[in-house]
Every structure is written in structure tokens, then in C-alpha cells.
Image 1 (cartoon, rainbow, N blue to C red):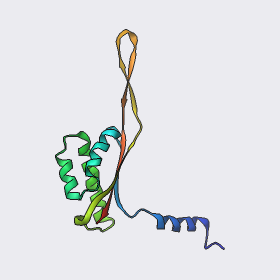
Image 2 (image 1 turned 90 degrees about the horizontal axis):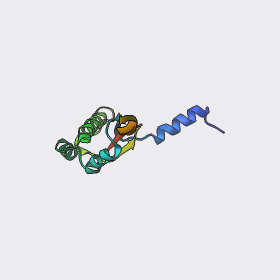
Image 3 (image 1 turned 60 degrees about the vertical axis):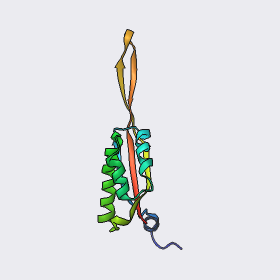
Length: 129
């Protein structure tokens, strides 16, 4: 027989399966996901100090945003999960496509060209070595 109400069983199951990694997300960021992935691929698998150094000296606009997300993930690891900051590394990075802002540019002879201003959802997951 069942050990309780279905909602209680689901709650217990979800607690067991919950992701225990430190993480931070930035949603609806005004940079395309392909441009963000270029910077994210550079820091994947690196230690926190090394990743911060790469982002600090990267000329790309996405690096500034990703640096903020990384600092947030480190703060979450330190305060919420009580992990050792010196042993953290960037385990996984994700940049998914967000909604696109569609704008119109007037052109010759009454035509209109569409400008797509893309957004991204950036996620960083940290873990201890």
C-alpha cells in the first residue's frame, strides 16, 4: 500500500532527485545565445579563479554578463550550500535561446526589413572537486 498521500510521496521523491549543485541563472539577457556560448565554452571545466580571469580580460560583451552570473553562483555555493569556494569549478554551462524582440527597419520603396533582437537564458552550474 501507499505510504501517504500522493502529494507527499511526490514531494519526497522530488527532494531525493533535487539537483544539489550550486547554480545561477540570468534570463532574458539581451545577447544572442550563440555569442554567449562562445564565452561559456571558454570557462567550462575551469576553476573559479581561472574562469574569472578569462572573463575579466575577454573583449566580448557577453563576458560581462556571464561574470555576474558566475559571481552569483559562487555566492550561492558559499551561502546556501556551504561549499568551499577554493575547491569549486565550473561543471556545466548552458545558454538557451530566449524570446526574440522583432523590430522593423524602413527601406526604400516602402519596404520594411525585420531586425531580430535576440535574447538568451544563461545558466551556470558549479561543483566541488
